[in-house]
Image (cartoon, rainbow, N blue to C red; front, side):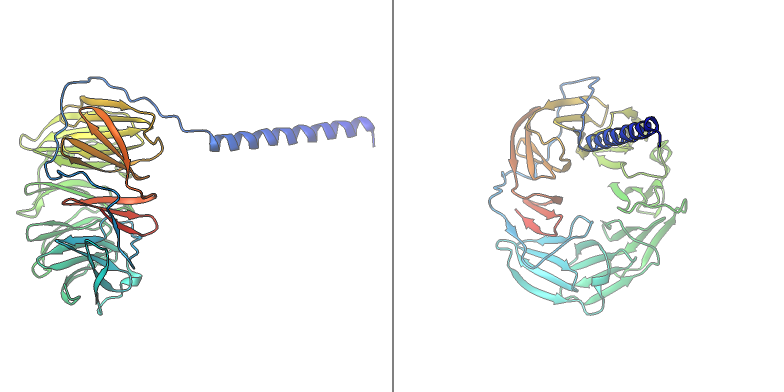
Length: 395
């Protein structure tokens, strides 16, 4: 073979190897290069205050915690336990209602549910009402069980239920894929029902529900939005129903919120709408607040987190309460919960960090001592933490 031809072939092969290596290096670089966080843009910073709650007055000692023994809760749904006075009730996969001591975390008793096999079900909702438990399963079944695990009543549907129940007075509100049911908490009978058939698409994480007095606002799992008068079980002629959503097919970044007489809708995690419920008029229409890594509503504020930045926006008019920048704020961890305590409020992150804020300043950063947090919720002065591994810890 001609030597020149061999050299050309070898040179071509060498070039291909080098280009491939460069491409691989670039690919690896793209995977490991750090995320760039944008500085939030503030259009109008005003001297206004976030309204605090008065329900929490004592600072939590994060050293004082109990772990519920012999309990694993890996459900994607948030509130897997119920606290009643000094007792904790939890539902386990092996058909047991477990009762724990709130002060020690020790198991007090176990009640067996004989009429249902929960092992092959997904628990969507677990509530306490009138000295009994309301249990909802993803298969569409809703059950009322007494404290001894005996069945009181049963409601069935052939549609998927993946939204936690909403209890209002003597009604239990259930959001199925494209339907809303008002169910009597006394006997499980159907009070009213509305159908919102649409595209056969639904959110795996379920829908959303908030209320103002007797008016219920919702996002269904099939992404339909609307409002209902709970007194009559009929659609409410509310301007919220006319919001021009960016994507009616995917609402995973959407959130709804009510505070005082205001209803707020966050569309695509980016556009903010606020309606005065009493006048049925917009006070804020499609306000572009820019995207954030995570966000959470709190009373009259929307708190945004982007890297080391925290930005608080007034939901009434879109003005900014404050912008905080601090290098000690974990950049990659998202907001998971928020509450007010004394004159401060606390923002909880997924890595266990607790950001304590007062008067537009970050005072300190504590940590609950738990990593890989899945959810946090509050009951009176208690903090309940669920981890990715299924552990439940109570402060």
